[in-house]
Length: 162
Image (spheres, rainbow, N blue to C red):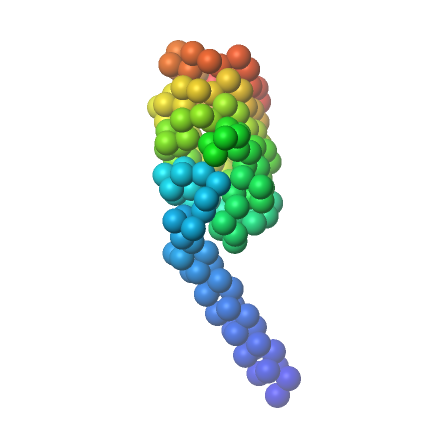
């Protein structure tokens, strides 16, 4: 009897978790966000979804409220523009998306997210970057070409295998 009850409760908790995940994946409405543009909000949502945000170590308030500039962990804004994304050692995994709509992004810190796949051509589109940290990510291959990042003053790629 207790075993059946325990199994049913476990199944109900699993179903509830799946529903919460589906809700977060499919129903966040960027049109209600007033701190940044619709395009910038949608880019942040894409970042969250494409890098398995529900399993980040710290995803505090992501997709749970309409104030990404003041409440979403790792997001910093200035004058209604995203200027910094700092998600160091946060268990991002999957494919890193195109963030080029964040045209005022100055700082991008992804250090320690070793399960994240990076297309360096997408990083090269972030021409406003002045601080880029992708150290200790297990990246391999040829050293990336970042000549388009004319504002870059700090680059950390240590701990990778280029």
